[in-house]
Length: 509
Image 1 (cartoon, rainbow, N blue to C red):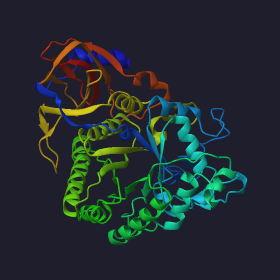
Image 2 (cartoon, helix red, strand yellow; image 1 turned 90 degrees about the vertical axis):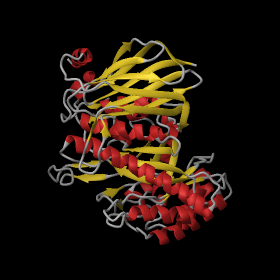
Image 3 (tube, rainbow, N blue to C red; image 1 turned 120 degrees about the horizontal axis):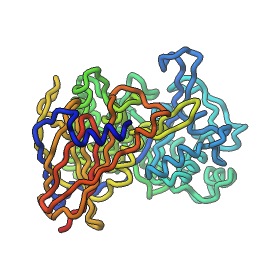
């Protein structure tokens, strides 16, 4: 049914059509080279009880234990991790995984998670409730990433933890041998150092209402600066992510937080993190447009603050943005379109966004407690970017109809980015039609080079924006492909309402 509906939609008898749009793409004008690290994920052991999920209190769920990590499952590998998730990570070409938190890390002692599992202490999960048996610790996280082929990004505890504890963790992971903690790693069966290169200096330290051990910006800078100095004395090759904005309350203090952190830590760091989750709204256009503008704005303002701090303090080291927590809540096509817009934002700002981590890794698959995991439209959209959008983000101009929200005016219905590979002369055009009800026809015109051969469109859409995904409907979620005729001057294509389309075409120069 889904494919028949989609193909009929391409002929456009079913929908009204908006004004013809124009998309001009200049492959000679590079915004920035896309860093594969934008296709990372975030993973944290979050415990939900029934009340928190809107279900009876007897229901209990953990995002890690009994889910990604389940030694009793027939799908478990030798380390206790489920192969369906590992295989999904491989197919998605996930580049890095940020762990173990998140809020969880701000009360976490990494030493609880090493050594024989039978001897590891059970602790209260102070961030999320419930208990944690610590069966997934440093060695297990590293093995999981080896299985996927992704790099580790470790977030240290600068909440209730201290600098020395962070240094001991680094020593355990990266020091070759001959010290207490490096020899402890060897004792537990891991002779070679892990050589983890990227370390987060705390998580959401500005989060006064929710974080354990939150700090003022001035106090955070003092602590993080000393932590960076101490950790570099153990391994001078590591890179740091400073804890940027996560608390976007109405006074705009988040801007001051980033400014103080950048000015106080800029010479010590390689990335400034920001976290942003898609804001909910019952109104479709507020959800689609206002949240998209807000997400993009957070990146632009942070990028400007980086340049200002570098000029003011004369920093010579590059500093990039790491959006190391982002996502949307919900398991329907509405939420999927929001994640697609996040990915478009990263491509659009490829000059400054050099790492991103989707929350959570396990959410990239749908899950039915009785029938198992399955690939949803979210999986396929992430794959469209992570497998194809590697190369240069290039200048893309869009002229189309617009809409307004309470806060933002003139929001284009089409959200478009373009990625060009000079080596293969291949262009990928990512288009989200945010119009809820109307198809939009667009003339796509290269301003340099010529389109050759036929283009191929991959379409991901849904009749319903609100219907939850289900295991039984997974054949409907597979992208539909269609060939498009081109000529030297470009192509014309009609984008379905509330849809994602990725067009692949060769550009000869």
